[in-house]
Structure formats: C-alpha cells, structure tokens
Length: 457
Ligand code: BES
Ligand code: MN
Ligand code: ZN
Image (cartoon, rainbow, N blue to C red):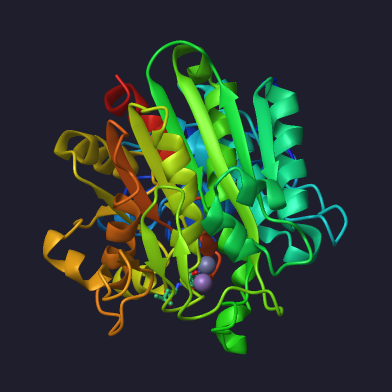
C-alpha cells in the first residue's frame, strides 16, 4: 500500500490535539460540550464536535499527560480512530514536532493487505503545517516496503522472491543489481553463504545493489534468511513460528534504500546494499554441527550450532563488501535472541567502535522515534569465539552475552571498512502500538537516514 495525505482544501474538518490538564483551544469552542461528554484528554480519547445542524464540525483528541509523553512514539497515529473523511490539524501543541506528526500519521496507515483484501478507507489527514510532506511520504513508503517483506510468509518470499522484490525496487529507483546464485556462490568463493543455503529447495544467492556514483561510500549488509528452521540444530516449534521475519535486516536495508533514493540522498553518495538471501533448511546435504567451514576471508569457522547461521552468511557478504573499502559499512540483522533478552523488542542494540559515529546514530535514533541503544564490542569476550580446532566458533557455549559475541564474530569480517556499525534488530512489533501495527517493522533505517549527514560526511 502507498502512504498518503489528504489534499489541502477548505473541505477538511479541524482536529485539535490537547495535553491532559491544558485548557482546550479557545477556537475549538468546545468547552461545555467536551466537559459534558466526559472528555479528559486521555491519550487517544476523541471528542467529536457537532455543529448547529447536528453535523460533524471537528474533533478534539487527547494526548494524555505530558509527563508520560516519552511512553509513546507516535501519539498522532491514534487519530486513525477518527471517523472517515478528511481532517487537518487545527493546532500544534508545544513539544510536538510537525515532521514527527506527519510521519506518525502515515506510519499508522499501514495494513498488510496481501491475503485479506482491501481494508476499509479510514480518515485522511492533510500534512501538518511546517512538515516536509515529501520526506515523510518517502520515509513511510520505505517503511511500508520493509513491513510488507517481513510480513510475507516464507512460502511466498523465499530467496528467489526476495531477489525479485529487490529487483522490482531497483527497477523503480534506477539502481543496478547483480546476483550470484547457487553453485556460482561456491565457485566465486562465498563458501559460508553456500553452506548455509544449500539444503533449501530454493537456491541461496547474494544480491548486490548499487546506486549513486559520487561521494562517500556506504555499504549496507542485510541478513536475508528467508526462513530459519535452525538447520540440523532444529528450533523447537515455538521458536520457529516467527522465523519468516529472519530476513528483517534485508527488508530494513531495502526500505532504507528506497528512502535514500526518494529523498535524493543517493545523489550525494555511493550506496551499496548486499543481501545474502538463503533459507536455513534441513536436508541430507545440510551443513552440520561440528563441520569446519572456510570463509571467503580465509578464516575457518567451526559450526557449533547450525542455528547461528546469520553471522555465517553475513561474514562472506561483509568480506566481499570490504574488498571495496567502503567509508562506512553497516550490518542489519535479526541476529540473536539474546538481544531481545537484553533490551526487548522495542530498542535494538547497536555496536560501533567509532565514538562520533555511535553518538550521532544514538542521538538521531532517539530524535526520530527509531530508538537504538549502544552496546560494546567487548574485547575481553573475543576468546569466547576462538575454538580449539578452527579460527572462529559460530556459537560459543554458555551463551552468555550472545548479542556481543555475535557482534564480535561479525567484526572479524569488517576489517577494510573505514568504520563499521552493526544493528542486532528484532524486526517485529509483538503488540500493536500507535504507528506500529502488530507484525513486521523496520528498525534502524530512519535512525541511519537521519544521522547520515553526520555519519557519512
Ligand atoms: N534468527 C535467530 C535469532 C533470533 C531469534 C532473532 C529470535 C529474533 C528472535 C538466529 O539465527 C539464531 O537462531 N540465533 C541463535 C544463536 C545461538 C544458536 C548462538 C540464538 O539467538 O539463539
Ligand atoms: Mn538461527
Ligand atoms: Zn537466524
């Protein structure tokens, strides 16, 4: 679906937003009515305003208590509960940013419609005054792509279909694509991608996208595990249930690519997006626990757990990326359950050794409602990923600090990039929140986009 605003016209109804405890805006002329209807400006509480003829003239929506504002990212998205029709914001309460209002409204429009037909048309909102409508639309459209890709089950989005989706996007935005597929992966020295993906009926592949040809080089590497059974270290049913979302990193990278193209950022940079697209499946030719695999970089990896497959496919893709020495490389991956244990579904950890880059990313993340939290590439844990019989261990026993040891594993393959950041995302909204319906969700893309002027100067 495509995000949209209502066209500005005289025909739209006014919507006032009010913090609880504040006076109602006097131009709403709603005091006695609002009081009589029990309106107390609770978050999302809507008070419809009648005109003299009994028609609907406008509405007031509560924002709740100002002191609790940090609990909610996009309070405006609650206004999707308004009656159908076109609305405009009649006021801008202190503390609300027009661009965030515009984006929050659009993000609340999202529905996953592929298998259920068209949703009923909801209310529409004119882009709030002072907001950059084109930018909000570009960001929302990228995020909708990410959500659609994550929500699409693996039966309809295997590595081949993920490639097709990437090609369709590249066709739209004028990006170049190359794909290395199946046995060509082995021939061209991507042994880890091939090993992880070879047991699937759909061939593994490396999708390589480029756009823009001047300025600093940014390479995004997105984990594209279209389904993660765990491999021979099979996941129990409850853990496998959501694993269609294990390509959330790839989906987020593609959504970000779409945002960068639509906002014109790709005119000022050299962007590359690498997606190892595989299904971690079970068959007679599956890679096994105990196997020692060579990597593209030459480091050998002992497979302690076939369910730690993400770091394997990313390692070869990252090695390939560093062969061009990008100024900045960022990996996005639904990499560990441990990241969820540490920070929960809302706020993914990120890792970066460059303090200035980390600070810019952290600040932008909070500002645009795409939170991230820095965790350390903790050198003392390096020994945990060093087994006795190979260079690296893909799944240290004990499992403590699982997100950190996964990040340390990836960092071994980042040498050659000017700077490296890694985001261990979840890619899923477990319960609906304003602007984020239950289901697939992008994490980190908007933070990267907003920090780009600082991190890719
Ligand atoms: N895709 C999973 C990680 C995951 C699980 C992300 C649940 C989000 C929600 C990844 O491939 C995986 O299975 N990781 C293992 C690693 C372990 C075997 C070292 C994990 O986190 O349990
Ligand atoms: Mn896994
Ligand atoms: Zn996985």
